[in-house]
Length: 427
Image (tube, rainbow, N blue to C red; front, top):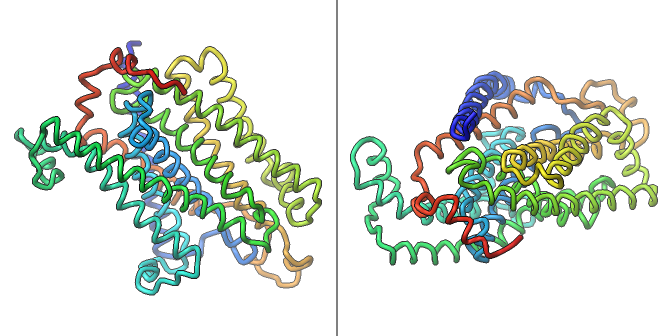
């Protein structure tokens, strides 16, 4: 099978998965909007479930993707330049998915806008919403400046695509080299501003968990750093898979995917070391709530999430691939990236659920007879369907972006051989 055929099949699989996921997800969204939280499995003891885990998963993907794009546009790392645009686009899409995932978790979804109308800046959550808004605007603006020259060039043609580009170009027509250089400088400024914002909001997510002293499983000063590190790993891993399919696919981005694989593998090893450190400190400290959460994760009802999903599928198998000869082949490296990204859903589930599924007061679950007063939590079908629908929407948005947005003309003209020549910054 030729490389062109493989790439075509990958795109078809991407589109097919997106359409099927969205179709399935419509059922869950209808249930959520029609019946509220009635068919959700969480309750008073475990108030956060799959949707909160999905939220921190997607927000990590966004922060990690943006920080990797900043390596190109702030620090001038030429090795990753072919995937700089995709990284930024991925950051925008996954941020949208994260906000959808946390929006659906709200008790009253229609009141979400009140955080803007009645802001309480003594609340870290309010700060995060405002930071997300600033970050979203920054991502959209930076992406526009990256695309502006190609939009202006495409707008000079005829047909529906040219009309779309004329709208998106916002009246700009300058396609000169000098104008592109000015755009590049603006992108550098925006990317520089975005770095502390991305670090603040994702480190802030870790801090939101870390400051909850009533939950020993979360109460750790290492959480903000661990969240940032895992964001880089998961965002970079997903980027490896996306770059193998879109914007020239693995034929054009092959060397970059392999190099990114080395970076992601190194960061993943560091992430594992940090996690082991967390587990060891909790075990030796014998903090009751923390130890109970670890028991649930290692040998309780969630053992398969840790041993199968997080460790085997998302850590050991991809690391074996990336540290072997197969890791030098773009398709294998991209597959390893996909597994790491998938495994991080398990990581997020293990952060959110086991720490909540313990009794803060012994005998609490037997004092009141109610299905909502229980430490037993497994996401309901409706919860799964909603998340599948959100993931499907993300796949379709990636596909639409690939189909409708202009290609990187400079990279297209350079081709794989020339992009390899600019490989003077080793990772």
